[in-house]
Length: 364
Ligand code: SF4
Figure (cartoon, protein in one colour):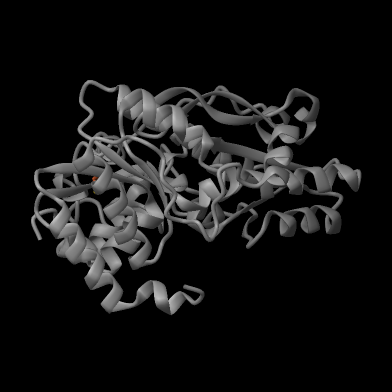
């Protein structure tokens, strides 16, 4: 197949659904890690077409959702400084921190600007040498290379008024933590296609073997997702546990070596807090010490900020696949996209937002 329409072909999707129904003989729980998958599943109603024995649970692969509340608070504190132009992708602006969001900071006078690329932020630093330009660099392995390249570009140009507030997290340590939990129910994974485009799928092989779970890097169209589920199901039914690549048109075993080199040049691996989940070992990327001048956390000394989370929000359980979004008592009541209590209701990739937007309940 060459064109996107073919990955949305109803006849092909119907054929895959029929194969899934024929293949499944007992209950299985499969997690789609990536919020992009969650939204594609909900948007296309795939969850309503699958056999009842196949339960999908939603994973922690939404970068906005897992950005720790203290990082939002640090962003707000930095943005409030008069010398700062704080830049971010739009989806971070409404994410609630302890007491404020970047959007609220902007409404009270902070110079917060939405950009479409980190290089736009570098251009702002070039145009405004008298100001400090900070870019909010969040995301998984997908966005880390681009953000790293922006930092290297600023360094090449000798710009000293540019920095990243970096909050990058890594997928394999999160899968390891979920699989190691005594409450784990997940038996197979759709691995995040975009992340695997950068990192390849080789780092998932040891996880599949150690925890005896099929892991299938999967694309984002309906036919991709159904094909990925069928591949995982066939393994489960046969008692096989390997990485099998559904997303061959974008993902290779080794991934994008040039992008991985940029990541290694700019970032180093550290333990990292995930919002609602807690600290996961070796799950984050921080800016290397030799580039500390480009690290907004160190430049603006905001590490000591204390935080407060909503007591109602159960996004940690949602992100670990322990409850569905409508299992949270605040869903659609105290918490809506207009008045979100947690990041999973704000983000374009958040599971709570997907359930709300597509009027879905877990019993539908
Ligand atoms: S519905 Fe709202 S309060 Fe409940 S888990 Fe989702 S974001 Fe948090």
